[in-house]
Length: 247
Image (cartoon, rainbow, N blue to C red; front, side, top):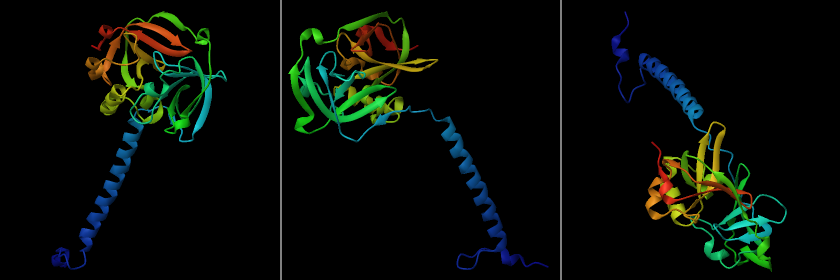
């Protein structure tokens, strides 16, 4: 007849065989449960997008425009690139006075789906003027017509294009608000059946958000405005009153 006293647990004695069997089963079940839960969470996470933030310093040559946002138009014919400072700051102060100027710009590439930003190097040589271009060389704005009502999200362009992954959604709201307040480019990301469409957001003629609209960053919003292109860079112009929470 078995001695039940063998199953009595005492901390300073070897673990009874019956207890060991239970512990082994529980550990196995928990390991399988944790693995399954991890796989479930991973498969249900949204794709943050193929964003890139290169830490290799590069130099681009082209014409710089500063309105409605600092933009470099590369000489090699590649797409226009917005220009920002390091951290949560726009580059308006450093590019001031360079409108229509051919420059060398040194910094770091941020990119998503062909849309690029230059994060300026902190070095004094980051912007080097070469020649002053003729005013007529500044590419005109192309008007593409009214947008109709669009629903989506206001994000800060630097984080969304690659400085953060993901750079959108409510989890990124506080960061995006600080970035836009600091002068980084606001972008409007419209959700479509074919995927996100994102454009530089110009409110009342300025690529910035009024203070009273910052609360709408990262929230589902509805806007209606005019689709445009600036040096080939997609943008949308809206009036502040035409931005509201989506129903």
